[in-house]
Image (cartoon, rainbow, N blue to C red):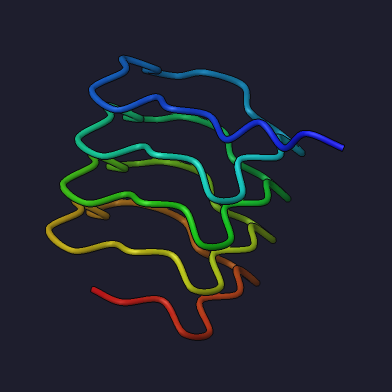
Length: 88
């Protein structure tokens, strides 16, 4: 079985509805996710270095092991998000 790992570095996903999206291991370096809805999304081990997650909805999102170095989370809603092992 082949595994596809998404490369969305520098992507502009402003206000995108990514509810329940499977973005585990994805490269979202420097992505612009301002106001995106990531409710219950799988972002485990994703690379979100420098990503703009301002005002993103992260309710119930799985961010275990995610790399958030330099990410902007101002105004984001991480209610019930799992950030175990995430680095900032």
